Length: 114
Image (cartoon, rainbow, N blue to C red):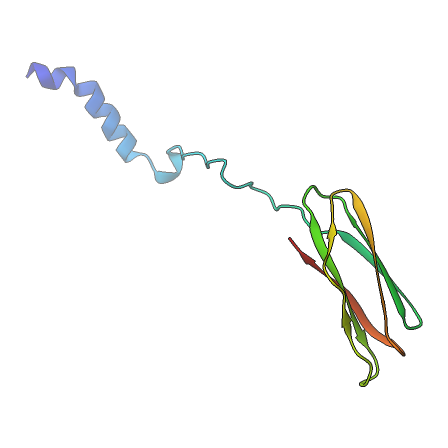
């Protein structure tokens, strides 16, 4: 009988915790393995088309190197579309990419890799 009186407060606390709703119990904190927000990545690129010539400037404001490539689709079926080699854009650096078609340019875009 003495043993049950000694542990009575422990049993009462345990019964109270088990009776609480799930939302009222504290949750474990998330570890620092991955950041909560999105990781910022990717150079800001601006392209200009003058006739059949294309020029793109890419500036990387983020701390991770971005590898950019210029892609040009020409308007004529016989004109070859071009893809430039990957260029490393270091943090706080600006790179210039150029290309051209023989005739008109249909579309231009930049691809990014980590």
